[in-house]
Image 1 (cartoon, rainbow, N blue to C red):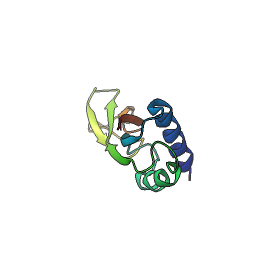
Image 2 (image 1 turned 30 degrees about the horizontal axis):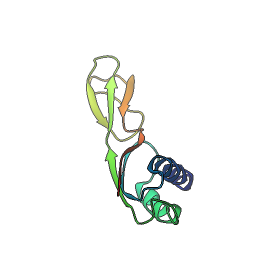
Image 3 (image 1 turned 180 degrees about the vertical axis):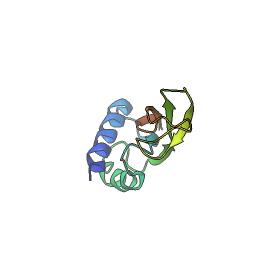
Image 4 (image 1 turned 90 degrees about the vertical axis):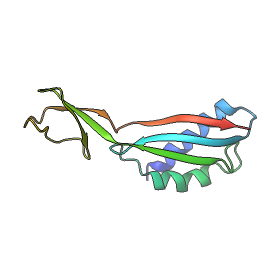
Length: 109
């Protein structure tokens, strides 16, 4: 479960930026194509944040839909996997969104 390592890094980064302040809320953006399971992050967050400035912080996760652009016709469309075919028939697509994992916001007390 690589989510444990990812969550440890999230807690470390947010703790560093919060300093001595208690963190009230953390907002993450996780792409649906990133192979990161939001439920696993939620579970790990509670464990990893214990005895840190993030203990008892609210964790919010926004899932980002996968969007691709066709390299042949330029059309943009939703995707559920990293490969696929455009409506024009081309399979030369580029993923625009959906692979990201970002710490979007943090709120401190």
